[in-house]
Length: 89
Image 1 (cartoon, rainbow, N blue to C red):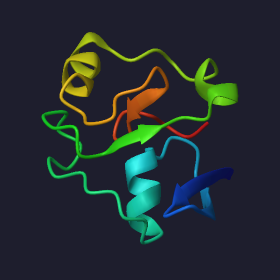
Image 2: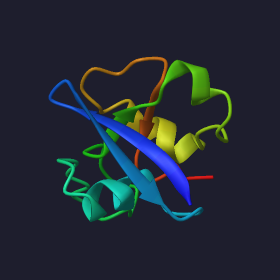
Image 3: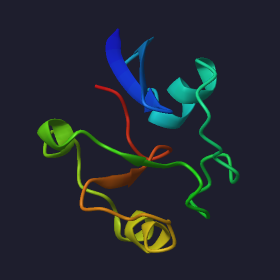
Image 4: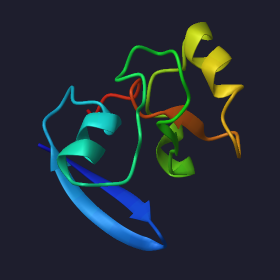
């Protein structure tokens, strides 16, 4: 199991997930408000999340397709990713 911390409305929400689970699925499984309108089809940016900067370099780089979708996300930052594309490990 992997520990994941979401910050929702300024509050930390601690969750556990199996390795290989996407951040979007972890959010959905734990009633975290993360939309994911395209249901992981990589055709929207509604699961936009910020990855802790201390962990950002530990995850695989975004694909070109994900980067194209991230360009549509509001509030884009250097540590932005799509929750449907980041696997827990």
